[in-house]
Length: 301
Image (cartoon, rainbow, N blue to C red; front, side):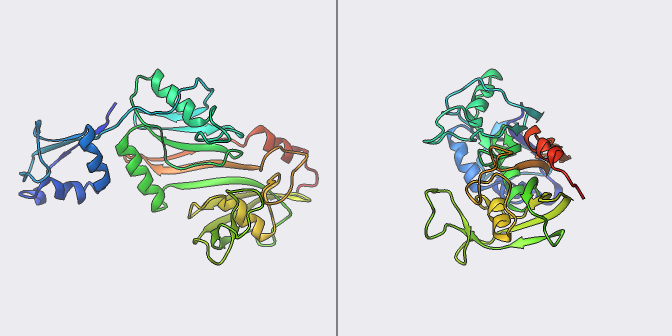
């Protein structure tokens, strides 16, 4: 498994210091390089080097990134892996699975299952989730298997080159069949028993959600949503604010007799592979609990 990075010095880089290539063309963060002191290294033409050394055209620079074993408890859990290679994997996360251990969910989390998978694969790696999903939300979640891949994918997430698309069943039929919800999201003054509860509030952080109605029913709509920002509960808060809450979203509306969770599914991820540069598009089909609701609902338009 490639955990480092190998590059050749370009003609225009002749005479510069290694660090100028690291922070320039390679765009590696200083934090990533600082962490190398606990195990990583830089090599110039096969010899260990300082980043202040100067290079010549055609020289080879090799960077080994530091990593460490996860401190999470490994648990043999069933994981639906829809894509995997040496640098990353994509999990189709089940609904009702927390992503990281918390006081309420100390074990049985996705991270515990990944720690066990790393152990099976003989990897001494941290568990690095590029983004998160709420416990009740199902669907695709991107995991980096090595530091360089994580840094690259996290940057794609920050710059919105990593595109996340969701499907939701909402209550009612939206008058506008496509659009963008741009409303700030933050903590309300009073969170009714939920420390994670969020709301559209003037003091919140900017949040933008694109939506498109795919199909309408008598009392429900299937809506595609794409995130521009990634605030806590963003889709759930924005749809509730708009007046079309997600079916079964107990925190922002009411329980549903048809589904035991919010009917929200992370459907698709689009991103550039950090190693190969290939454009990847990975999807996870709508889960059975949401499919069943759509099949049972009568009067589709």
